[in-house]
Amino acid sequence: MAIFIDGKKTSSEIKAEIATRVAEIKAEGGKTPHLAAILVGSDGASQTYVNAKVKACGECGFESTLVRLEDNVSEEELLKVVEDINENADIDGLIVQLPLPKHISVEKVTNKIKPEKDVDGFTPANVGRMALNWPAYVAATPYGIVELLKRYEIETSGKHCVVIGRSHIVGSPMSILMARNGYPGNATVTLTHSRTANLSEIAKTADILIVALGKPHFVTADMVKPGAVVIDVGIHRIEDATKKSGFRLVGDVKFEEVSEIASAITPVPGGVGPMTIASLLYNTLLSAEKKVYG
Image 1 (cartoon, rainbow, N blue to C red):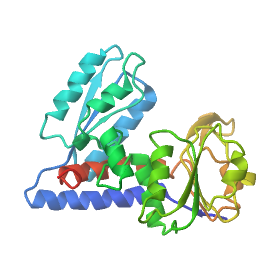
Image 2 (image 1 turned 120 degrees about the horizontal axis):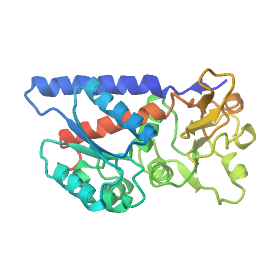
Image 3 (image 1 turned 30 degrees about the vertical axis):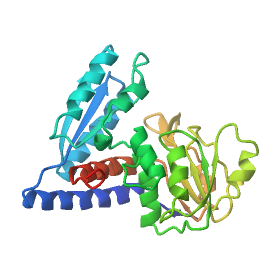
Image 4 (image 1 turned 45 degrees about the vertical axis):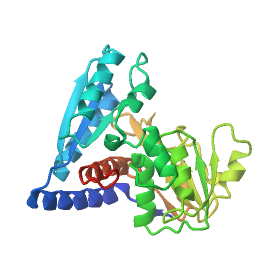
């Protein structure tokens, strides 16, 4: 059986470390880190995510501001809100919860956020700095995965890492981080996606398999090399009549069978998910202490 890589436990440790540092900053008379979030519309999942981020801010001693806007807010109005937060010297980090209504350009909104406040790590400036291995705010989910690998002391140097999924939020930055000179890093990386030929065969060559394709139970045991480390980024709600709620959460990996042959694996839920918020808070702390952009 594989070792379970516990993101819930690790994220709690990181938040405790952040809270300790924030207490030190306050004791020294420094500025309390302040995260702002913009939520457009009333999507249930988005509200849940934002509320969790606001709650985590409180646990770490941060200040937080939540700006709620209606579904029908114009793109111009949203951009003005972003601009106002950009110019607010008291706010260290800004996130705009996705998805946005179809009439609003995600690219325009992302590009409007000052790189210095882009604690989601989505702006071209931060993506470019990350690729060059310069100080940057790394996208929260990839950063969370890197931190899990580090804290579980998983060797990456010289290993073959296969990433399944090429999104700008997870797959693409993950492939860059794993190839960078450093630890975790120095891996030989193959970036695959839904149109990759012989995907199953390529996946089976991985020492480290990172799956962020967005398809429930896509990776099965016959796609995994015995002893591989498997990181499952997916999260899906599927029907399950045995559960009181009528559903259960699963990942992109068929956990029950893959956990029998992997050396280590992230469960769903409780694996990568909790690390995303911890990483977001860490980026906000870096911003408050001017450790990325000075």
